[in-house]
Image 1 (tube, rainbow, N blue to C red):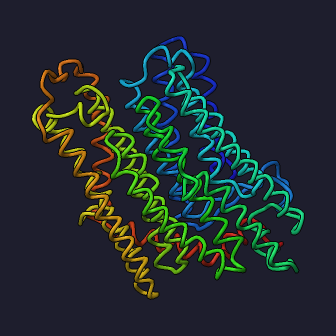
Image 2 (cartoon, rainbow, N blue to C red):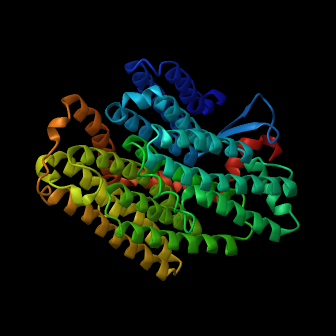
Image 3 (cartoon, rainbow, N blue to C red):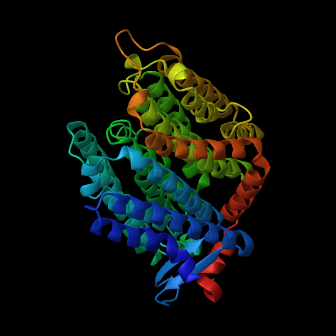
Length: 500
């Protein structure tokens, strides 16, 4: 299965090389990017089907036996994250046809976009910590390039904040890797699962676990390490903001889930209680930040922080139902959040900016866009029967099942405040008339641009509706994925074979 595990990495990298070579050819680079995303989607579907049917699969690069070589491995969580990455990447690539200007294309936008997808997929299928670090760095380089591409002042300001905090995360990650290797002699995740329990000084293991929590917490934008995100995500073009919002922080969440279900499970009374406090504070501070904003993308950026708290909550509770909720929430949120950023871009084109005070009249001038906004907005807020309702329901029920009533109450209150933020966007951008003196800019969009901008939004909105109205297969999938996380024997056997 080595070729199947390597394809989600190799296809975007090969596309990036071709896109860079054709960066001055206009349409050629754009359609190369679309073709690469389609190929990635096909590979991701094939990987998901194999993992669903056969269970965890692993491959050793260069035929070096684990735990000494480079391991690629996919369980259900890895497979669905690669699949949702491919879906989101294709949607954003189509949207970018009308959003990214020729100057940024000539500077290498499509190549950087594909490198970012390769880094994200690599992080999801890698089987050892050092290569997780490598893919994090690939993501950081590509995302920084995309963030500052074009050289606008606001982009450079946001890019500096973004890269400095992420370099701090990298330094802490490398420190943790060195300490973990020093006490166990391995960095292979499956091998660490057994080795970590043999360490005599378990207090040191807990210290290293907290170090990883901080390192990955910065990547995931958890409290109090999130301030780089709302300072940077509103600055680049909308296509870049959307892919960032959908995927980048989820890689940090994925890393936390992987490490704190597979490796750091010897002192859950401390580590997962700490995660619980972080999760609740992340939910609350994120939603309060969103409520205080009056700019479309800044509101959405703070809501990324808030919703990350729900995902960490599922990990922190560490029960089967809670992990089901965390997996379900990951899938739901990537689709919804990327879509809301795409909607914000079209809204800006039809009015006069992202500031809600300068927006208005969108319900009258573009009722289709208003409808497409309501689907992800209401899902984010947790309205039944949309996907966000089932995600929140699973996590609240998991909290109540173990008597964590204050945690459940916090999750519900944050949901209500999310409704307030989404209602504010609806009232200001869609419902109220355009400010005096302003005129609708609908005529500025050609028919082709409308198709390129609205087709990805409609597709992601449809996926949100499918998850919401037919949740049973998605919950069943999340149950199987959570079972693999709580019982990682199959993961260990797939990687180590007889050595396990």
